[in-house]
Length: 293
Ligand SMILES: NC(=O)c1ccc[n+]([C@@H]2O[C@H](COP(=O)([O-])OP(=O)(O)OC[C@H]3O[C@@H](n4cnc5c(N)ncnc54)[C@H](OP(=O)(O)O)[C@@H]3O)[C@@H](O)[C@H]2O)c1
Image 1 (tube, rainbow, N blue to C red):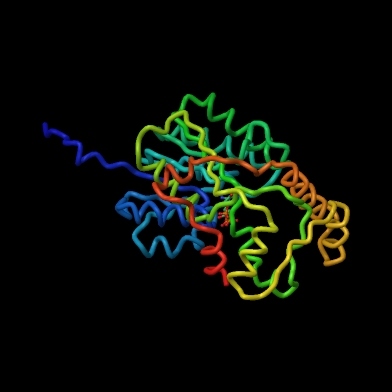
Image 2 (cartoon, rainbow, N blue to C red):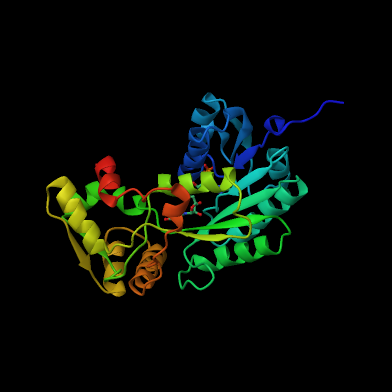
């Protein structure tokens, strides 16, 4: 019989949604933190989208939130799992439940989940599915950690060229502040939670310093050297502008309702959780804008 020294114990990490933006960044952050590529499983519905990760030695496995057998196979041998929330709004709770069930059946020892700012009380229409998933995790018997991600800064910075072309950011967010953070920072925090102890049962509010879209417009003006203003309009006016630009009525209404909730403070949160996990300040918005431009 051979002794197993602590160094011999291998932890296998898995990240779902690894073909997407956030999941892929979490895998990259795990590697950056020194996790051997062979100990990381990138679970993707579309494995071709994770080809760059398999090129780095990461195990890429197919896992579809609607296909429990694929999830059980993908989680084989996995110890610590990050469930990246799905994008099929309205069907996500059932999908997440499939992931949690498969994790339990596969013997996963800890699970982290990417939720939403104040999911338990948020007025955002996106919140109920996150809240229910958090409740499911709490009752799952699995050690779990909730990562309540605020908005990605990239939701706005990816549109920098469009804002510059128009000379304005049009929204119904009023003077509402948004604790947006760079995706890579949120991914880094997730990697820290996966690879370090002390997070079981914790809920982290992951946010950057809250800013208004007026402040974002000012920073964009500064970084680009061109004038961009924030034009805050009532929700009905935003719906009219978006539908005139070709968006369907339902989507325009959804966007405007989110903006209204933001105007009311839905994403305005002061929390040091992101900085504490990263061990540094979140990336400044000016840097994310510079990278986008
Ligand atoms: N905080 C924010 O501002 C914000 C903004 C947008 C979304 N989100 C949430 O955060 C998540 C990650 O964001 P992201 O930027 O990485 O989004 P993304 O790039 O669109 O990636 C979403 C990933 O989810 C995967 N997925 C969707 N349905 C699936 C299913 N049935 N089974 C397995 N995988 C499935 C997609 O797989 P495929 O590659 O096969 O399509 C995709 O890789 C989103 O899914 C959404 O829940 C947050």
